[in-house]
Image (cartoon, rainbow, N blue to C red; front, side, top):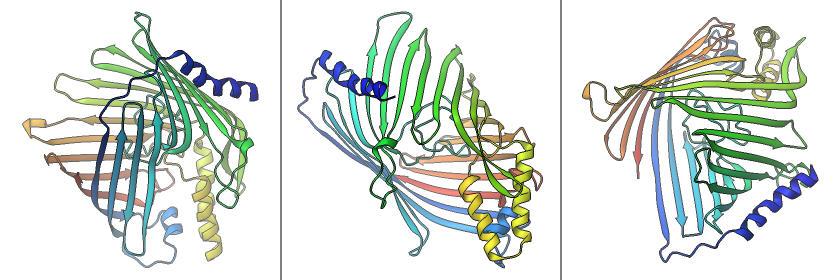
Length: 418
């Protein structure tokens, strides 16, 4: 591991020695932009759901709740010919007593040559070809399949990327991306041990007009991961994509006899997807996702029994402990193993200008529960967008979607860009 890491760390220096230095430009560039989101949500709560009863214990409230929040995004970019700085920030405001600030991205980059770039700071990576799920997204932020395009916080890291193009009908492009991830500051919230520094590597090829990525994530404190993804056009309007990941000696958490058990094994996850565009500009995305870390149907029944036992104990301490276990081990948006995602979008139907409706569903193939949601986007001006987003969760009380805290929700957004 040490010798491999040393060779990888020498790669940028060796490449740099072989590349020509770029001539500087005379003009620098600084841009500010962002958006301001106002979001109002209505929820029809499932008061019989164990998760609802755990979260809202002993609260005598209506089954219809609302939420009003403000979300400003402020971004900046500074760039010269060979230097750059990126800043992405986000804040959430519920009230003077409840608000938060997030630094999504803040990194500098240096381009010593046309083929090489070096970056350091906090950056969002986007590994994988999937739209709603990314089993090979080893360095990605956790994706929410209900809103895959939602901006999220990046990863503290440093990276070097080398890109080379070829005049060949076989291999058109090759790139290598090396990412070094320091240990989270667990000692006094400021220090981490050097031996727990992680390394990720992605090799990318445009081979016979097919995008292929091979990646690995090497860690001393967690499982080692290996992945492969590919994407190619079957026809001009039909694209196929897939991902495969293997996590060696990974830890899955399951409930057994009322306690959390760590199950260590090799875990395989994969995704198969298709994207289709027809002559009317209708886009269809369909993906099948096998989550190797997910719970089986029997595992989920044990988990549901654990929730009910925590409620049956009847004490605040038992409820708080049960809820803490849920938040620590079972908070994933894809808690089980088999999912099907389908999305259909149609810009400007019936010549309705600036209006784009879409409909999507996430179907749990294990317990037959599902979510169906529509997104209605209207953009009457360049810098203003309105979104109406109703969602319906359907399934039995012991199913994944049927046991969530809300049965229906409607979100209304006003988004102003600047």
